[in-house]
Length: 119
Image (tube, rainbow, N blue to C red):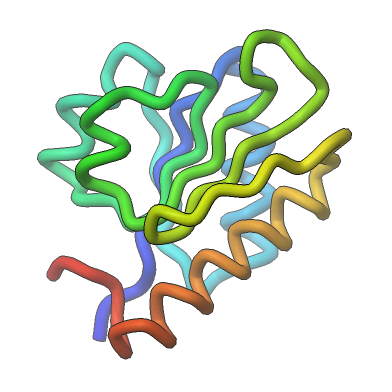
């Protein structure tokens, strides 16, 4: 069984890279990938991520990812978390809240099917 794939494609780059490094170090059970926001569509095809962390939710993310986390939509201090179509808005999300959201998404994906969606 492969690891859950997490794609970080949020802005700004420095924020994305710090989050990716921390998630990689703290959650070795996940495969973490980084991309520019404009590369999301291509990365959805080539990487087939299970979870996407982004600044803008593109149609390819909604169609292809089983879970996604949109950071600071419209510049607001919130995050929108969607796991298998169920969305919740979280106010004032800090790093450990983000990590918790990733953990919940990973657990829900594994519990729902026994494994991430694609191999």
